[in-house]
Length: 438
Image 1: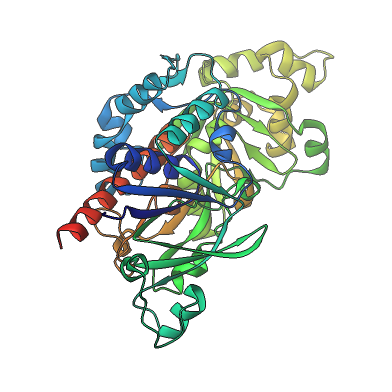
Image 2: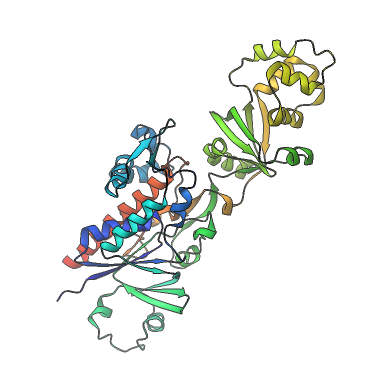
């Protein structure tokens, strides 16, 4: 009887689960699939992505969609193979119809992540996938490692012949910390989908980096992506406006100009409009130590119209009342003017209008990686072949956010993770097929 090939998938997030699904569908009779997850439950970041509505993907034209990703030359083939349409079809096959919002984002009807995760896990269990929870990966030893290392993990004495046919053919051994103490498992091939470094309390800790670096795998440092930034507010401003939404503004940074909204916090700024430009802002801060964004606080008004309104007689009104009466500025928008405009410029309608249309806000640093929605950096693509297999660890494939790519929010992150999981699974299937024929 031919023994089933054993595949270890380490990481139970979207990329790992998608890889498990593809492997199980393609080789259920020939492959035994085990998913190892450090947390007590699966898909925690998937559930987190569903807070406020699970954004599956985006409906914009494919070329525009692909342009949202870093490393487009590496990711474009993956996203063409499993991208926007395939994400929608995948949800439909699980029993969930989708709709497209006014922003072009695609959501499941009902907006919830938990029902989809439940159906997904049921499908995987029905396909025979075995889950191991509370398994924190701490080491990998390939057959090319020292006899002493193999002996420590397999229990076979140095120099002793490995008699078991299973042990003879298994290519690598993985070591885990578990609630029951250290555990080891062996596999013919493996797929790593351990996430980046954002939201570590959900399981993405970056703890895999020293393990792979010890195996000679080059890793780009993890950095915050889709993140907020610090601003050196005055105490008065941060006390008064912490948590205030700033709506209907135009943000310019370099050649990029976007309209939307974001939130002022006691530390700085965060929210969708900030996240959309976080990558170039972060990179500029790394290069120069600071990045200055410019806000148009009244994008629907011309500078001339603002100037004419501000020229109206103020009478006995305070300047705050005058701003509210003439241009409708109060609350956080007025507060920003008082924070950054020289006091003498309030006496000049022309200068005040210029400031309203082009207010500079200096950002000093990104918020910590643990607070970011996602992370940049990870396994460098030169460490991988075209199938996402590690060149230094044949038979070990990688997927998801642990790869060196980034994308904005809006469905791009989830589609990217699941696309890389699917692609790596296809590569793993090809690898096992080549092993059988060899």
